[in-house]
Length: 406
Length: 63
Image (cartoon, rainbow over all chains, first blue to last red; front, side, top):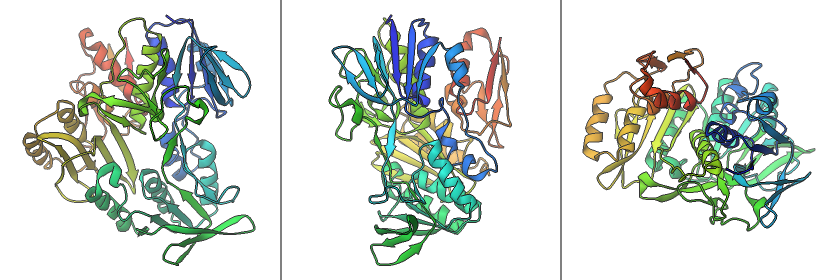
């Protein structure tokens, strides 16, 4: 076993890497480096309860004390990794150098910013606790809200603003939101959840200019010349893997993610990657290389990378079905598997109660549900077993008679 | 080995059912039903995986 494990990235994947290493019986030193000041916390709650519930605090996953005392971690919080010295086997931070024998990279991803808005008040992304505090403060003050990008984060923020009774406009440059995540037909169906709630939705129109006065945002001008006024503009434009600090130390994918094998090993022996940064082949989907930005993926990959990093045995291989959920206007959207399909079939009603199945060849490879908590994991099992398409459709039609959850 | 589920914390996300469907299921109300709260020792690995997988830490295992 290595003498010192270093984990860079102190969010969910990094925490699970630490826990995975300890659960595998590793008793050596562990250093955990995190750019933010806080011990790992739950990012998924930031766009949900944190924005909508009075006095909601951040959901901590573990305390500094538990990390130090129970998991024996040498904590480097508020410290930014700046590079890897492969020859010396050092992680170089803005404060020190940390020697590693095994390294797990779990630095996550950075949200894309709206161009030309740096330093402007009232413009934010939603990734960190600091972002969420800014957004919440503006919402508390009754801000008129614009969300740019109708993906899952943007949609959750729109839903939170709507729940507070704020004026909210959702703007998306693509004609159909979420096409890449769930396919165009299902993306259109989900967008109706916004419309039915009364959220203004503007599709297929880009932002030409962010308007401001005295350093505070006042609205946006769209490509069609129209102006929407706002006190808060939240950008949900997707993320890029936070790997700039690595230079060319490990092999990167063209999107900046880290190329891994099925055990999450990178191109450099002794270095592993997990979570939003990692491209890994999915055995279930013919070895397709996927980089996933889901809670469950970060948890599972973090744990696996941590175990493999400290193990002397044959590494364990990834074996899971991608899964994410999102809550909009009191509706639960859930997706299992992959949207990369030859056909998408809607079983049951559109909107609340929907079950959409994704076919590749004669297999079922994905399922999306709305308010179908009882159903989705039963479909997941079919997907995990590379189940026959016709059987899955029949099964879903039988499940359709089960009550809608909400 | 005894399973305890905190239904006030549960969000019905179903990871427990994915990991150990013989012991957990998302029920009609959208929250977890524990199908067998005292699993035999031979099922420990799956039940522990289910408990660990809960995104909101609503499950505990005693014994």
